[in-house]
Length: 157
Image 1 (cartoon, rainbow, N blue to C red):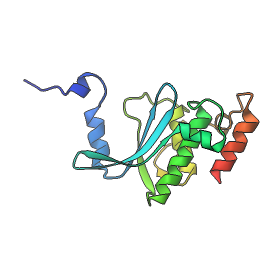
Image 2: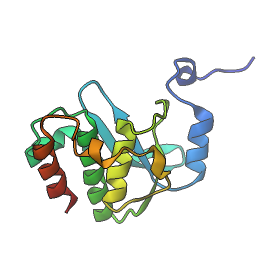
Image 3: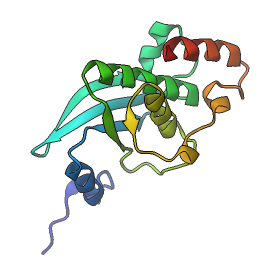
Image 4: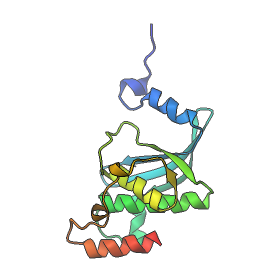
């Protein structure tokens, strides 16, 4: 009889994909989204134990004067910039993206985090075509584009 792991049965973990990520022996940029926030953390795995090296929740943007939704594309981009800054402080330069079981969709919030991390100085192997456009990052499709652009430029320095 073949044992089926509980997390696989529940559709929470793809063990084949996880094994490939662990074989690389490079820290992972783990990006998750909840109903209210975008969460990014850099995780290192040793002997099947995951250790979080740095963590950012998009709620931290309120410290920078962010008064908009914490789960839109500009907020995701800024979360990526902040995680890159924290990673550089810890001496992390290169990471692998881990989006788990989320569907990979072009220009999504998950890839906005990746673009923010790349612009923040992290090295991530990713195709440029899948990243969101600068118009989406600056929120030019919203009425608050000017305010968003100022905060983005402030954090990108």
